[in-house]
Image (cartoon, rainbow, N blue to C red; front, top):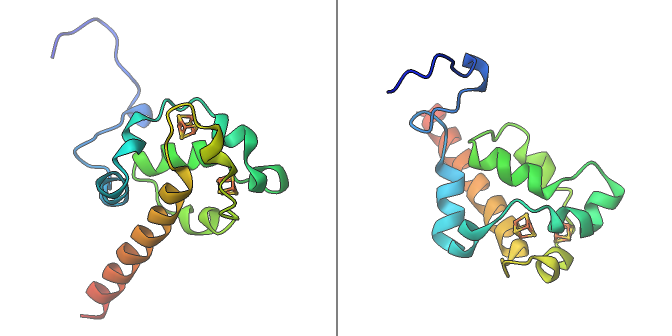
Length: 119
Ligand code: SF4
Ligand code: SF4
């Protein structure tokens, strides 16, 4: 790699070879429109759950893209599945379906991990 005389600090480095991409891969396979997300935050601004709780769909999406799944379960449970976010998305992404797929994918990953631990 070319040396420009500066670099990112280790803690800010994202190694796409090492992150856990199982959940985002599952979501994108089943809802490819999510690839077009601009991270504009319109879904977050209109979000019913976001008005009542700390839920932030845009932040959650970014965390899942980075493979940070630790708090995903409790965050996803805050969504009311009202569907207001999909009416607002400038890219026409079915965000409600994205949330449903995140829930389903996370359940499958957790179930798979539990089975592996029980062996
Ligand atoms: S479906 Fe969930 S994420 Fe979308 S606006 Fe409703 S509560 Fe927010
Ligand atoms: S409104 Fe659509 S494009 Fe904007 S952050 Fe939400 S999902 Fe992404």
